[in-house]
Length: 304
Image (tube, rainbow, N blue to C red; front, side, top):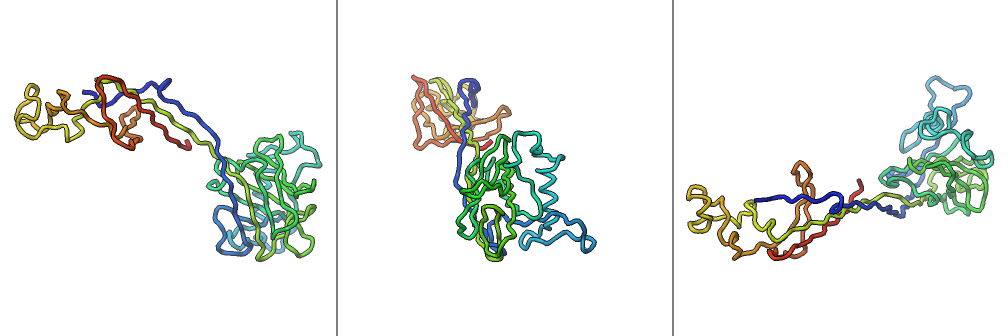
């Protein structure tokens, strides 16, 4: 008696990937202890030529506790130095002096968690607003995979970079004036209580699995795994294949003769090691047919 039926991976099992996008919006209030965990905003400062005291690591960001000098050094090393791991310096690409950005003095670092951006921030979808300023910070794609350049809306002044696949945004800090907002030339200014709103689209690849389960009329019509098919009294089991000693473990004659026909209620999917990996539940039980083939199509989505 068969309990499993193999499928043909080449024809009966297909995987179709497709990209999906979701609008994301996060509001950060500078200095608040209740900001969203998915997006953080921290200030980073360039190392000074001289330190006022040994062990000076710069101003600590209130919520995250990150030191401004250390954060600046980390960002510079990861993305802008000749020793960058994730990004090769501008000089090796066709990016002109007019469109490149190299951090100096002080910047803001927006860190978007992977939970929020998925596989990457969709290029061209990022926008940042400070206190409802006249200008927004917007991104434009480049010919470097995963890198975008930030501008103030309606301006050609470069304000920073966005690294789409890492969820890292680096924006120049404006030191002009005292009003929080977006300056089209000098960057953004954030003061205590400032409202910073970041919007973008997250991207994730969904994999649609489609399994065609074909059952011929003489297959999977009975199972000793189902207790309702087993005999528990004399005359209810196949006496030709057993004795009174093992009754209760034999298939009822009614099922073997075809007087009773089972109904399909679920389909189990197993891997090569016979481990159950998924169960498809039918909306209503479907009667098994012994004279024609039946085909069940199982579909489900996954992110891996």
